[in-house]
Length: 289
Ligand SMILES: C[S@@+](CC[C@H](N)C(=O)[O-])C[C@H]1O[C@@H](n2cnc3c(N)ncnc32)[C@H](O)[C@@H]1O
Image 1 (cartoon, rainbow, N blue to C red):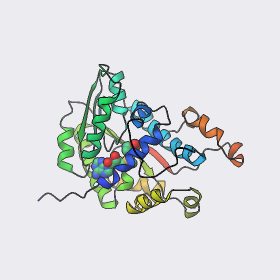
Image 2: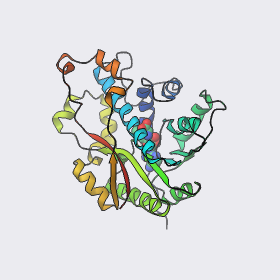
Image 3: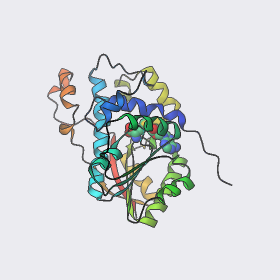
Image 4: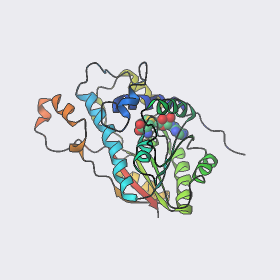
């Protein structure tokens, strides 16, 4: 008998928060789509006074988005499945620019409904040359996952995600890995995940002025517990699930659109620091071993 699926919909509001932050970057469509959101967002960030930590958050999400783009370019695959895409318009943007792309963009039903409304309101026009579809998919539903995979034509598949694994516990991560592994073994291709986050040492977590709404959201979803202990343990986890790490994205902080804003509010003690912020997240391209 099929297992009853856990309800992940309480995670979805975080996608709006991310879009509002990304609305301050040059990520395709982010500014226009963020302008379509009315009302607040679940993290209750201060958008009136964009301080250092505001721009640090925006930098992190811009950098993460670009890291997925970087690895995606390296694959050259034209069949792309994005999981838990939230209010991210990478697929639409790619399909606007490249007629060979077949992109299936997926998330939970409420997000897909709202996102479709946004897409209808965005100035996309006649410009979409590739084939773009926005569909509902709970990544824990292996049968539905398979149905969507079967919608792609021949050729290797690239599966991508950012901002998902930290909402899955160990057993759920194992199940998702198994679904992805089976798919890639059958079709060829790779998995690009930006969700290799490691736990923060308590003194580092204490330094970030999280809002009380952020803290309770993180606690409610066990975000810190769901992260990896270290990059080494993440490596062994994926290895134990049948994957090898093909490559790691290289962040290019200087190219990010938020940098000029961040520089204006950089505290004096950080002004002359040359080294990048400590590495707490990486983006990997994985393939079946
Ligand atoms: C933090 S947001 C990230 C959205 C987007 N990838 C981004 O980086 O802006 C987390 C997303 O995961 C989606 N999500 C959570 N659990 C899911 C599941 N089981 N299946 C599919 N999507 C899920 C939520 O609906 C939400 O859109």
